Amino acid sequence: MQKINKKYDELQLQYGSQELNSVYGYGCKKNAEAALVFMNPTKRNIATAKTWTGLRAQWLGTKQIWEFLWKCGLFSEEMLAKIKEKRPKDWTSSFCEEVYEEVSRNKLWITNLGKCSQDDARPLPDEVFIEYRDLLKEELALVNPKKTIFFGNQVASIMLQQAFTT
Image (cartoon, rainbow, N blue to C red; front, side, top):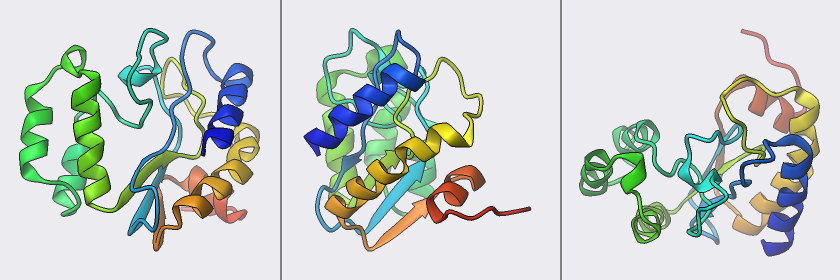
């Protein structure tokens, strides 16, 4: 995974904001029940900050995704309550590790197709995500999830290499 993450960092320099770090997948590292694949991180994730020294995982310092996972029965109510108590600036490295220990206990792997952090949530061109596709396939092969769930039409289309219409 370290080799793949190094390649992700190289793509961050090419496609991401130069002021931000790339963000990697985290959770259950082997034989996950499910891999959840989102688009790409934004600076709302505290792990994108160049000053951040903790794990560089998805959705750190945010709240909505954790509530979604709880509603799906994939995350504990106790951990959700802890998250809801915290403001983004109150998330410490140890708290982030605690959150991802919960993710791992629930046999989830959470990642993005693109690891290139952006200043905002504007859509990226398909060509950028295509640059990440083979690396994500390698990442998922290492994690070996039973199921992979793609969030968003663009992510699913690129990973499945076919266009979807609504």
